[in-house]
Length: 465
Image (cartoon, rainbow, N blue to C red; front, side):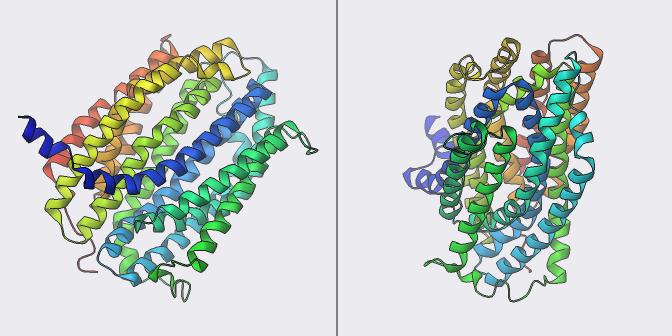
């Protein structure tokens, strides 16, 4: 019994070394990024509830853009991983060029949207029983933060294009190193510009935005510069900008496989923004509490996010090489590893829940809500680890329509209606509403288990390209 379980779900030392070689650099990069974001958030939280809430709302809106970029490059990235797996450099170059055009389109549209409708979007979250002064201040701080953050969208776009390609080809160290440098810049200048230390002006939330934008340009310079001029330059980099044309047949294939993924990320992130809007009906304290909870949760979530990314990379390359049986065996072990790892992480998060909110200069109610939200997030972390791994398993085989239904479709059809009805038409405590929304994802666990077990994702999508 134990032998069968071990053979199916537990790998050998070489297996875990291979997984961790890919996952750990991603964890380090995301971990440092989220840790500095945490410190950034705490710094802004020291200024006041309105400042923290305004920044939180804007970050939720920009999060939609971030995931649209992620979804856009990931759609092409399915092909990048498989082209790289079979040694096709020109295929990798073509997918890179596709990413440039799509990311540029998304970025231009986003900047125009925020320039003309940014204030109206922020106002959607200013609800509840707080006084008008609170709302006006939160809106003012949010708008000043947004105006500066728009300058950082172009370098963010370029980093995602380069870093995603490098990761899909198994090179995770450079994005990690660039991310470390960027977050160090962000942290230092946050301290200088938020509080006005060492002779710098005291700019508050505007200073936080300037520090973030500066860090993104630093990250872009490092990633792009080392990729093109470093000692160990990849073979597919040669001739990368010889042309920006993308073969029509590849555009069609990426659109078929990648468009559902782009829509999925866009609709899912918009769904997360909509969920926050539903919770915000219960007041500004809820927005502040949710912001605190999400900040610490993002730090802990790096484990299942990095392991999910590893699934996409490892399984994508195996599928591209036609190693179907090996892909299925490794996928099962990687999913099990992710769930077991995140169960341990969740325990740590439970101990952190009552302590972390005390670091913020906000109301007692906001801190109380934050502790409860963190506890709920910890309880559902193992489930989210399973969902994340199954999502990337299905995506690695090009099942993007399935992942669209599995992910964003579910959010809009199930999660948002549950949150909307409970927040608008009942007096249920907002923490219990949050718990119910999270619990609804158990339905996805069943669906994901069935789809992965059936092996519908076991296919080579670049074999004839």
